[in-house]
Length: 306
Image 1 (cartoon, rainbow, N blue to C red):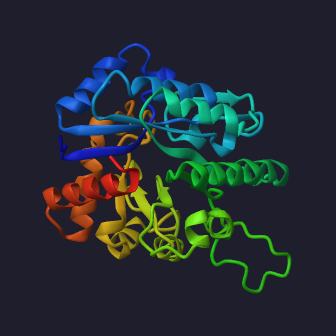
Image 2 (image 1 turned 120 degrees about the vertical axis):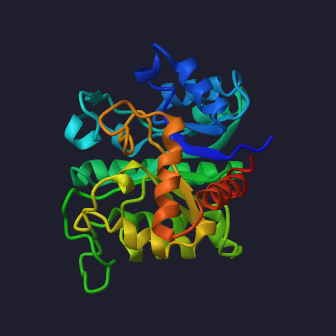
């Protein structure tokens, strides 16, 4: 069965949907939208996998989010969702424990994993890198793509890579993720074609240069609700990035329950709103919405083997 839309990164497995989870999922499916629920630590990964057995058109990824590699506090200004805050208890990634989840349902990827430089704490970043490398290795072992979470500080100096940087350190999480994947991905080691199944950078908010580096090694670029907000090129030049990203490397995600797109901004986000993001991508690229929706669905099928 082919659906017109797909939300490649949602969290309807989170507690925010405990009261009406089934209604939210069925609303998406009834409106021609498939959903991939994303694990952020062991318990949310397990819930995401279990949900795949309840619905056709619902899939899961399993992984440890970089902010969950250590104990930390996250408020609404960081999460972009009014009234939401939480404390992460911290978890060490257990590869064998996560592997067992594969047996429980339709797992189509590893993550969300990656690097989060929002607080730019060197000790936590080292923990993130250890967990990220372990998840790249698990993706290699299981032949599954990576669901990447990559985030810089709110307004750091993030341009460029290591050129002219004798310390070998960078504040650009996108560049560091790129380097770690190049070093540890089995697909790149054996020199497979550029358009591979390495993964996708969800909620992309990097530069055009970051996007081009990712696309060059076969990482898809996924856009979320903020592309529908008033442009803030000092944060991310979404218009420029979307125009430059090849259509056959674009995906879309809601990151539900966070950052709902216009006209739903300020409310709890959900997968059925993905069409607002697709509509905006089409508008920026000057293409027909149906064409863009169809291309995104095909891209998701290729990457996640749906």
